[in-house]
Amino acid sequence: MTTNHTSLNAGFVSLVGAGPGDPDLLTVKGYRVIQSADVVVFDRLVSRDILSLAKPDAEMIYVGKKLDYHCVPQDQINQILVEKAKEGHKVVRLKGGDSFIFGRGGEELETLAENGISFEVVPGITAAAGATAYAGIPLTHRDHAQSVQFITGHVQKDGREIEWSSLAQSNNTLVFYMGLKQSGRITDKLITHGLDENTPCAVIENGTRKEQRVFQGALNTLPQMASEAESPALIVVGSVTQLHDKLNWFS
Ligand code: SAH
Image 1: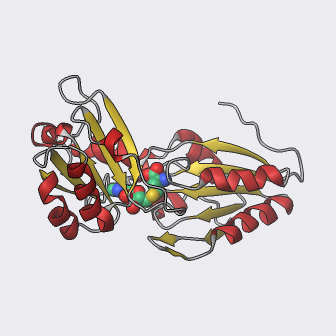
Image 2 (image 1 turned 180 degrees about the vertical axis):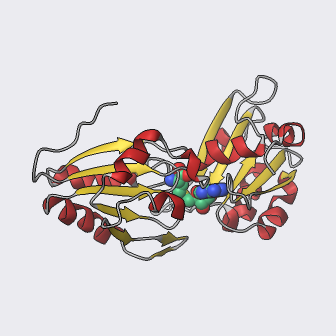
Image 3 (image 1 turned 135 degrees about the horizontal axis):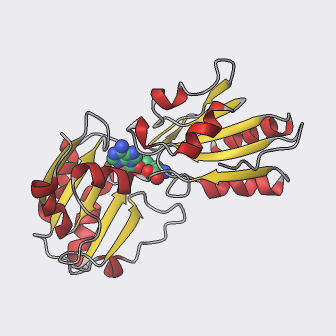
């Protein structure tokens, strides 16, 4: 294995995706960079087992976010990364899932680039891949879905609307992140734009963790399923979700 780290005194940031929950889903590269970090800046969804890989004297900085509530504002997180790197440290910025999928990884790297700080990106298994794998729901399948889309359930910050008509296709799998609170709206929009109200759906709560729960139903029962589920959870819409009955291996 190779490493492209740092000359002496030059700080460096590794943006690492920790995967969706099961600590064994961390990549080998992620494992290695966490072990050598001086500073670990981490989010709420990163498991303790992964944090415990850091050196005993590594500085651990929690900047966890909850839905609609930022423990530390994004600007300040960016600033911490810049400062720690400028002090010459090897910094790991550790996020749940993959940093480039609804993880603001791009925004943080833009700040580093603007400040002349070197960085690398270590991808992680995003929740859509991990949770569906552990639920026995293939995202594509020749008999069910030829495409898959990952969508944020959050309303866009500038009020822009999602292109619902392009999502409401029967041979398409939809995965909504951060969608629990918006499930009523998601259901209405998809049905209004032509998706059958009987389209199979699933909600996967705590995907890949031992507490994982999978709720199954149809689009018209999605708000009910979502009201029973707890965060973190994904909403999966499409006929692939029926395969859970046959392919469920993790319970
Ligand atoms: N960057 C992350 C996503 C961050 S957004 C990734 O690539 O996975 C946070 C949302 O991800 C949660 O609201 C939830 O919808 C989803 N999520 C994260 N971990 C999850 C898990 N273990 N099971 C189900 N959904 C999860």
